[in-house]
Amino acid sequence: MFGDFQTITLLLVAFLAATINGALGYGFSSITVPIALLFYTNRLLNPAMVLVEVVLNSYVLFINRKSLPLVWKRVSPILIGLILRFLVGSHILFSANPG
Image (cartoon, helix red, strand yellow):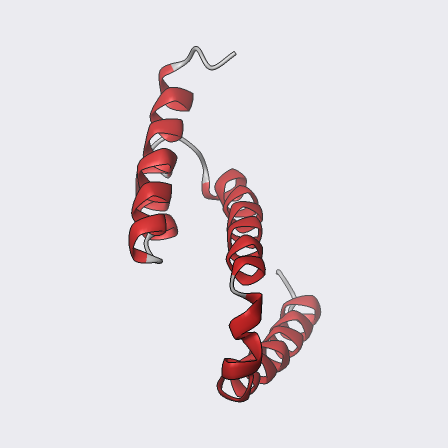
């Protein structure tokens, strides 16, 4: 199942990055992506990392859900900015001519 060198290396790096992320709360992508790019293309790696990060961040949000009302006032401007940038960026990419 996990016989090739690339997959074993990626699993070990992801485990190390998850351990560091669990201890410090930061660093999963910063450690995993540069090493994984040695073995996988960016086109394959980006969607996989987005899914991993969504699951990881959703888990952290679920664990800390009682603290959400305390930080909501500070987080809401960031979320509004992210949503607006997402919408504007998506529109620009959709309307851009690739030629």
